[in-house]
Amino acid sequence: MSPPKVTIVIPTLAAGTDLLDCLASLERQTRRDFEVIIVDNSGRGLVRAGEAGRLGARVLETVRNVGFGAAINEAIHASEAPFIATLNDDAFPHPDWLCALMREMEARPEVGSCASQIRLAGGPGLDSAGLLIAGDGSSKQRGHGEPFERYSKPAEVLCPSGAAALYRRRMLEEVGLFDGDFFLYCEDTDLGLRARWAGWTCLYVPDAIVEHGYSHTAGAASALKAYYVERNRLLVAAKNFPADMLLRAPACTLERYFWHAAAAMRGRGSAGRFNGGRGGVLEMAYIAVRAHIAALFHAGRVWKQRRYIRSRARIKPEDFRSIVRKFSISPREVAAQ
Image (tube, rainbow, N blue to C red; front, side, top):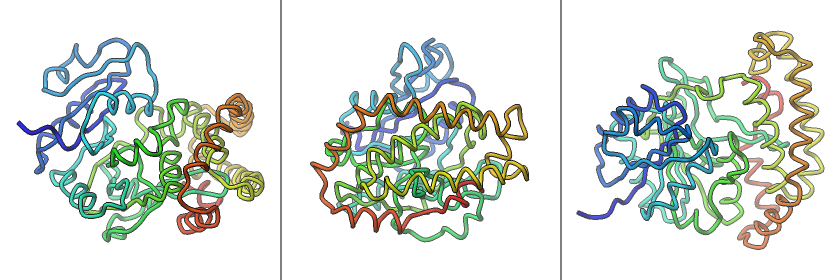
């Protein structure tokens, strides 16, 4: 039997029925030269104890919840396949998903990653057609909530959502794996920007369709998500943005905070959903302060990573700025999602 060409990595915390449905969708894939590695992040061996552990996938167990990126990294180290696909345990690929991704990746050696057409499960709208980025490092899903028919053509995008993506191992070995210190959220943006600095591109593949249960792990507008998104977007910017972009980032942040507050008052966007729950504007401000303080504790490590990224860059800062402008989203649009 030939070795697998693709390793599909599924981190899981709950190891529930969604994971079973995800594995069932992989059984229906038209392309079969892949292996599946489930990374059990529960710290309690839930996968092996349940039905998912008897369905033929390799299972890696962590002693505690190490986060999304670190879990993916464990599986990458444990595999040798030249391509790595990442998949949330509540993401359900259509049968031609892997075939469509690999067809584009194998035909385009300059492409380091591919983004799927990720649809909101049970709804008519799109979850993601790649990622967009704002001037302060905040990233959002391209096309989120829009009809997926508007995103029916292949296109270059900034980088893929890690919920359903395909990566070239050669690119990962060159630029480094996911940053495990992010724990949750934005690690796909960070990896995508590092790949951009190294000269790799990303392609959106509309035929690679996935149904996704949006933010089931941490909640669509929870305090946990708000904290990690805010802290990690600071790390993304500090690691990857040229100096002039970093100097402009605080003004972009203040503008985004203004629109978040306005959205919260009207009950719109993620801030409105958060404000409509147990949280409020004051708690949101507290989370932002905590996130900034936490980011400062990473300053030394981030500075070393920043220098490393620049030392291996194949594009100039002006090229990077051009890429960011091409795939930018305004602070107001960030707050509206």
